[in-house]
Image (cartoon, rainbow, N blue to C red; front, side, top):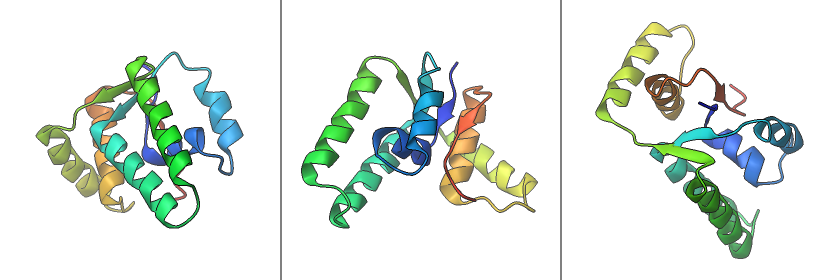
Amino acid sequence: MGPYLDTSALAKWYLNEPFSEQFEAFIRQQSSAAVSRLTTVEFRCLLARRRLAGEITKSVESRVYASFEQDVGAGFLQVHPVADEHLIAALGLIARLGRHPLRTLDALHLAIAQGIHCRRLATADKT
């Protein structure tokens, strides 16, 4: 299985951001990548926020999301459901990693990646 991509990693791939070239080089070496329904919702919100902030146009938002959906449809991005077990696992991660505070959605992404047995998680988060 390819790496699990969180939303910050997807943004590097689909939008022109700092370090996008490096992430694109990494992702092109993969035969597939895993995301979750959480990622799809977060990515859609990210695009809408950037449009509302004037960072991208409606046309770019639509084109980028269509490209994302095309990658899902082609099977490169494998979308995994979010289950109650992932929420419970996230609680456990927060408890075990108490010295390293996790944000809510980061804990969920990590729990999902573990739950689907992904050995690698790609993120562009700073913390």
